[in-house]
Image 1 (cartoon, rainbow, N blue to C red):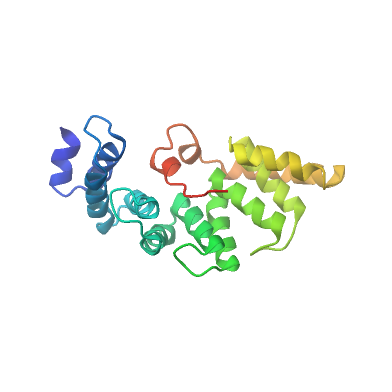
Image 2 (image 1 turned 180 degrees about the horizontal axis):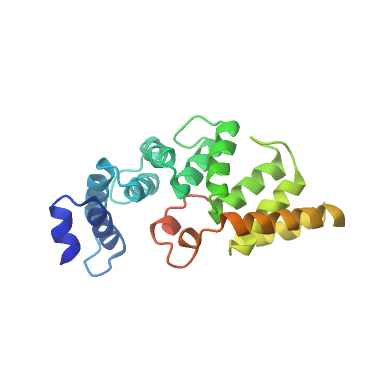
Length: 209
């Protein structure tokens, strides 16, 4: 079929798409080693979504041996090219010290880059950093801002955290934060990263909290 023919001819996007079919068993017999093979070929050609997907396979040990350092390496490659899910995952790995030396400042940097692109999981992560004061100043207003933006985008983790945080804030703080969150939502919302059709972006999350 089309993806197979194009992938064999070296078309990177087709290689990534074929890998995704093998990973999820859609239209082909599921084969994680085949998924890893085609993601690798596409990633080596600079296909940013494939780089993020390959990192996720390494992180989870699916089709390749579990290797957190390789996961961090490929997330970094994709993150440096501006791919929000990879930036968010790299930020999380810096926060937890998974496959890379823990560094809260780097965690805050990469998480913010993804959050500002409108990637809801990263917005929740950034809010959590503000709530804890790790990698960014302790700031409940900014925490509420990013939880609210993520919650509006449909992130379930953010909805629960938002309710908890409300009890620690004044009505004025909540009002200010709500207005800021609405501004963020208007300028940074990326439905292709957050909706049901988010595809690779949606499946690429490695967060556990």
